[in-house]
Image 1 (cartoon, rainbow, N blue to C red):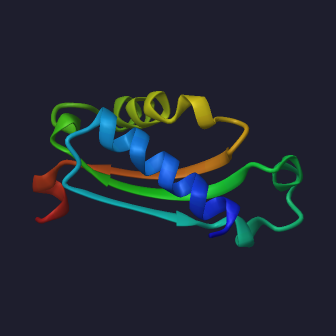
Image 2: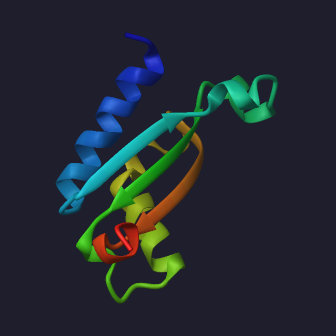
Length: 94
């Protein structure tokens, strides 16, 4: 298991604790940023798709803040950059 696969497992664990997850997918996109200054520090670039009912009534910024709060202990050491898609179940399956 690679270092980023281990990191993803920890990210998943934290997100599962923070949200009633209906769907979760995390991609390691670090390879797209090889040579980038942030990559030199060891932090990876990740993409998160998270579907949870807790996002109902929240705007985009509030949804992102909720995810950042859940993953706070990993930023900026393990996570240098994060692309987020945060949806309610109704938005995801629409």
